[in-house]
Length: 118
Image 1 (cartoon, rainbow, N blue to C red):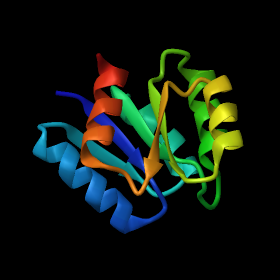
Image 2: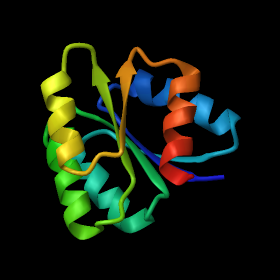
Image 3: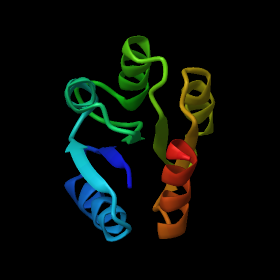
Image 4: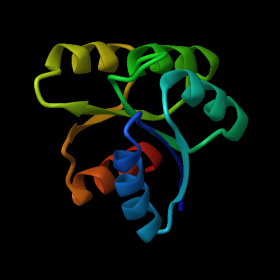
C-alpha cells in the first residue's frame, strides 16, 4: 500500500482521514500546515499527498508549488471546501493531480489516493 502525507490544520480532519486510509492498509504521515508539509515531504518522500488549501503559516497552494519545485514527480491532491473553484483551477495549473471536496466521502478519498499512486 501507499505512504500518504495528510496535510490539514484541523486535527479532527486529519484524524478522520487518517483512520479511513489506515483501514485500507495505507501508511499515514501528517503535517498541520504547508511549511510542515514541505519539510515532512522532503524527509519522508511519500507516495501521495492529500493537502488542504486553506491553512496558516503556508497555504496549500504555496506548499504544492514548493513541493513540485523540489520534486516534479510529486503526486498531490488538494482537499477543498465548497466554493473554492478558482483556487482549485490554480492548484491544477500548479501541478495538483486531483481534488477532494470537504466534507469528504470515504470512497472519494480512496479514489483520489488510488488515482495518485495508480
